Image 1 (cartoon, helix red, strand yellow):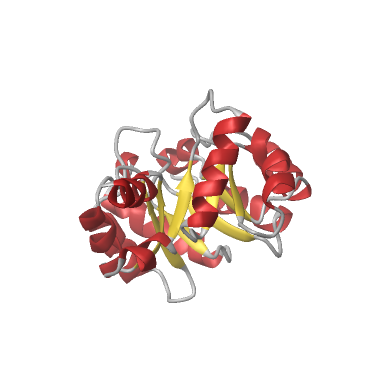
Image 2 (cartoon, one colour):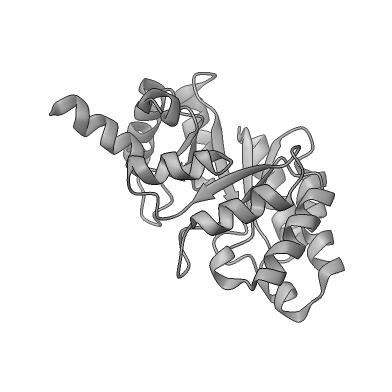
Length: 219
């Protein structure tokens, strides 16, 4: 697989809590140069990034991040606010407390609140696979699919584990073709990226692939 094709699937990501506006602008410049799918940035930087890039790059941001235990009303407001500020894509975190309680209808309603608030905007739902049992992963694949999200996403990258090949394969097998898979967290090599894409992921949440492209240019 050509590096250029891999880069087109990347949400070039900077979610560090102390990220500066200068760093976000640099991230945007890199994403534009390497033709990434989007930049994934904190909500507080969305408006500034949108003013900076205009229509040159998609802006993705995170909702209920990274823990997912915000109330549904707060998540919906976050999504509406992000979209007003210029976000083109929304990555929300599910409520894992509800999952562990087996409160599946509440889990569904939590996602639907953000889906309603983000109607017309691409929605990715982060299920944080590293904290789930196999049964919970399967159930969440079904719920995310029922809620009309465009993507199901493996991980925040802020918990105890990131994307695994097994999880990407499970998600791609379980979800209908209308729901795409995003792998995120721990994608540190070209081989990782190729493996996840070959297993059915269509987006990668990573900053490392662009860095590798830059290193290759400077070698």
